Image (cartoon, rainbow, N blue to C red):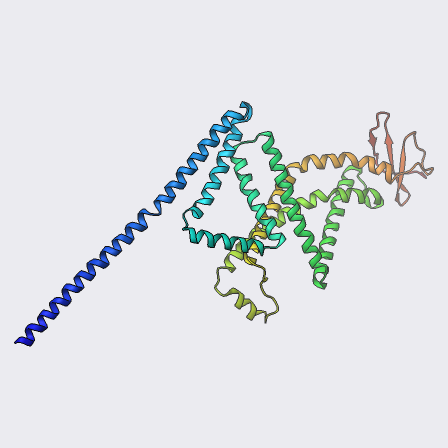
Length: 361
């Protein structure tokens, strides 16, 4: 009986102790939940108040010192830029001091290990964000100048990459073959377009007008750039989608090493995958820009080239011959089979090309 009573008393003590420990654990959990819910709000609130104060101060300063004709656009631009900086810095502000120091050290080490190309890509990314703000806030004269300078810098980065890849490709047999194939294709397209333009104006075969054909083929470079921009944009978008799907696979490095027996491996450069994805995105964007601007100015350029073709034919591939009786200011060019093309120059300087004639008849 005494043993049973002592056992019952010990069990009751155990239950009381468990209930007390449970209440303590519940109180700790509640305190943690309250701390998690309330404490992060204070830095966020402080950051929001600081951001609003910065925006308000910038608005007052811009309204006070900037002339009225450009006030609205410049004001919107500065407000948007300050807001962007605040939103980017909010996650850093919410970190604890120890994590801030750790994140800052990581950023410094990562920046120190970046290659020159990756640092240029970082600058391009910053410029793209600022350009987006400029598009959203206005179209003032200084904003147009900024956009032009930014586009020139992006073109410089793209051209630098093209030359770097050309140098890498030219060092291998396969790369030399790809370069030769590209140049041969571009030359054939340029000569074909030039011949069509010349034949459409003088209405004879352009094979006898070699100098004019060569110069007009060189003038076809903007057409080739526009065509290359469309191709580059399509390929860049396709490769960007492909890389996004490919990089989602786990252990893709090991799979590639096993599949190609270690011959082809990912670059050991830091952020290699992100760099590759940004390169495809950048060149698809550059290709889209080339195609868009080229298509807009193509009609004017085509008219300008067509206007110069008669003068080029007359000055470079025709001569004052004695095979035919020529008027003053006229020239001829042999076409074969005893036929000649005669160019008649009017007193006003306008050139006319009558149908080919046989001068021995």
